Length: 497
Ligand SMILES: O=c1ccn([C@@H]2O[C@H](COP(=O)(O)OP(=O)(O)O[C@H]3O[C@H](CO)[C@@H](O)[C@H](O)[C@H]3O)[C@@H](O)[C@H]2O)c(=O)[nH]1
Picture: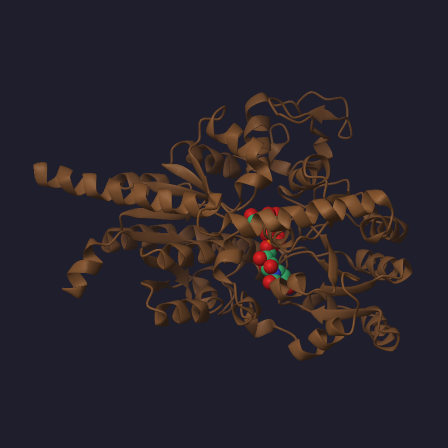
C-alpha cells in the first residue's frame, strides 16, 4: 500500500551543476519540494553529495521522501585525483579544463539514469542544455533552473538579441540595456567574454540560454518584491514562464544548526572562536567580507583589501581561501592576522565560513560581496546593505540591480569582468577606494541611514514571502500542483491509448 502511494506521488529529479553557487540553492530547492510532499531524487557524484548528504538525511528522518542517486565522476579518465569534482577545486586552468571535460562525459550515464528513474519532471541546472532533448524523449517537462537574478537573465537575453555592445568605439563606452524599465548603463568591459562580438566561447554559452526557451519554464531563487519589474519582463516581453520561490535558503535553513551545517562543512573553521569575537562587538558594527566560492584574487589585491579594511577603522570578518594562505610567500597574510589578534578589529576565517550564521548575527551591519546571487539574496534576507565588488560572469549585472534599482549597494569601483582565476593584476581595486565605500556603507549621514532602512525593509519582505500566503510560498504550491496535473493528464493519455 505504502509503495503504491509513493509510486503515485509526483517524482521530481534534480540535476545540480557542481559548483557551490549553483548546487547549494538547488539542493535547498529540492528539499523544499520534498517538504511539500514530492518524491525527490537528487543526482550527484560522491564528493559533491558529501557536502549536502547530512541535510538530506535529516530531512529523510523527518519523514520527507528525498534521496541522492550517486554517479561516478570520471576522475581517472581525465587525469584528476579522487575527490576533485567541483568547479571550486579548479584553481588552475589545467584542473578547471579537466573538471569541465569530466562533467561533459556525465551526459551519457545521466541520460541512461533518467530512463531508469522514469521521473515525472526534471529540474536541471541551466548548464545542461542537452536535458531538453532528454526530457522530450521521456515525454516529461524539463524545468530550467537559473541560479541567478531575473535581472541578470533579462540583461543576457536582451544583449544577445539586440547586440547593443557591438560596434562601439571603445571597451569603456557606455551603452544602455534595451527594453528595460530602468535606465541601466554598462560598458563592454563589464560583460563576460562570451558576450563580446564573435567570441568563440559563445558556442558554449548560447545553447544554455536557447535551452531555456525550449523548456517548460524557469525556476528562480528570487522573490516578487525584490525584482517584480524583471519577473514581469521575463514572463511577458520575453515570453518565458517562470516561478520565483526564494530565498530558498530561508525556507530550508531556519534553525541555527542547519545554517551552520550548510555547504562545505568539512572546511569550517573554529566556530566558537569567531562567534565569541562577533558576540563581543556592538550591534551592526561588523562588515562581513566574502567573495563567494570561486574568486581567486592576485596577492596584490589581497594586500590592498587588508590595508583598506584596516585603514577604514571598521570591525570586519574576512573569509580568505586556503590556497591564498598556502601561497602567502612572504607571510603578509599571516602577519596581518597576528596584528588583528592584537587590535581585535578584525577576524580572518580561512577557506569556508558559516555565512548564514554570520549574516544573521546582530553584530553584522553590512557585507562586501562579489555580487554572487546567493550571497546577495542571503544578505537581503538578513536586511543588510552591500559594498558591491563584481568580478566575473553576471556579477556586474547584479551590481546594477543593487546600486541603480534597489539602492542598497555602494560600488567599490570594480571596472572589468575577468575569469575568476585570471584576474588582471593591473586592475586591482585600491585601498583608498575600499575605505571610501566602507565609510559610505557604515556611515551615519542621512543617505547611509536611508540605504540601511531600505535594506531592512527588503529583509522583512524576504521573510514574509516564504511564509504561508506569501508570493514565493504560493508560487511553489502552484508549480507543484501544475506538475501533478500534468502527471495526471499523461497517465490518462496513456490509458486512452
Ligand atoms: O565561505 C563561504 C563561502 C560561500 N558560502 C556559500 O556559498 C554560496 C556562494 O554562492 P554565490 O554567493 O552566488 O557565489 P559564487 O560561488 O561565486 O556563485 C556562482 O554562482 C552564482 C549563482 O549562479 C552566480 O551568481 C555567481 O556569479 C557565480 O560565481 C553562498 O550560498 C554562500 O553562502 C559559504 O557558505 N561560505
